[in-house]
Length: 385
Image (cartoon, rainbow, N blue to C red):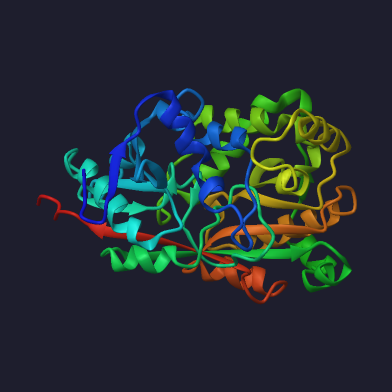
């Protein structure tokens, strides 16, 4: 489609344009304060239909914005069959929205919207890449904070441009940076007699000889914990297996926290080291020497920060003291493991602004979020009665 501004938006066609789509953010954001390029390899794993497990249950169309033969923006439009099974309006997503030029945003959103409308979508939400189990939101605050794995970076102009294009705020996602030192441990200190009153609770890490079984436990608890939560899409077994396979070179037993109550799995957390710690100075496409440096840093586990990517407590504990205390015990365990692992900070991210219970728990230790990402939505058609 063509516009008077000489900007054109067209679907991605062929492997060369797909490669361009994947690499585009580091090309258009290069040199902007606070931006650090992720590895192209990681982006390809997330977006390529041949690699991403999203395409087991969803389909997408990618678009590029051009001006004078030069790409200046991108967006995806996608439909997830797991979401269509949920009650409410037929919801489709936009994602992978990146541009440094606000004038490009309404044209990209129009292309994604039209693609979704022709497929019967009644509500569009985003940005999600490619659903809520991937990168989420437009960065509203925190552009100059440390980069974190799985967290998108955007210039401050992008959010306002989305709103000017007719999309409304749906939800803010908050991220907190928690120090693992003595001060944080004191803030989260749990009285010994309280532990005793809660019953027999044990903590363990990942069993390297039983990764498939522990992956199943992780998926079951996480899906049970977050079912019916705003925006949630259940994790599939393939997605969890793919995640653990991707992080296997940097995976240590201490990064997996399982809380068991009377021997039954009750709560779970998975922590992933921040790849930016060891790749941030190498660029998105490292040289051969850069790849050697990266491999050496992985072997030494030269990370100083990490992110909690999955955290959940079984719904059966809803309304009980354990429901409130299990996340506290999980965080306490993460702090203790900070003495074993090299992480000086751990990010607790994607906390819904409406999730006051979890926010109150975290804000006893970290009073304010250090990054905010915003989700948007637009009603395209009223669902049929």
